[in-house]
Image (cartoon, rainbow, N blue to C red; front, top):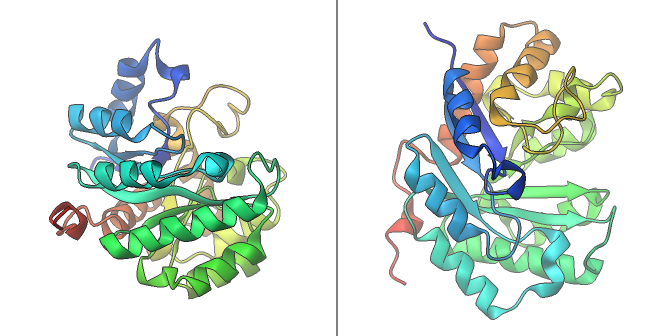
Length: 268
């Protein structure tokens, strides 16, 4: 059986791929990737993500506003996300959440926009892709307040330890691991990955960021998700092919690739 992998989170529309995007996508196919989810985070990026997904049978996309851009949120931005979600191959609202490391947007505005996008996801019946950095308690509080478990989804580039992993899993979310789990200082993150059940685990690159060891510091790309799978396989005592198969199955489940997606058929 041919190895199968999937990248649950990449940013293929970013300008760092403008010179060789087709080659990057071809290398992903050659590496055995069955699915790539290209993720919107910047305001106005969702249409480009949708166009890229339309051009490639194994690419899907999300629409959403990253916490860095929460300060620019308005009604038209919200409507743009909803329009994008009605396009074919949309799979989630994301990436959304809180980032208190840089605070490019004020924390209060980040929290308000996070809440609004969870509400939109629940109204459409679609999952969410969560970004959280140095904001665990506020993230969990908002997820509880807004009944985000009803939407479900993924903690992308999971960065916590075993306790945060347990709380995410208890809410019904999947955990997606990226390049940092391969770093020598992974520590508690590696412990969390080892403890995550195979049926709740995803793998990603967050390309062009966070290239895994031994390629740390280089521009990342989806083909390198295999290196993440190899690290997780070592932590969990299984083969990389098992990680790839399970992560692909989980991606198809959480993003409903094999069943109906109600947000495509709801009246505008």
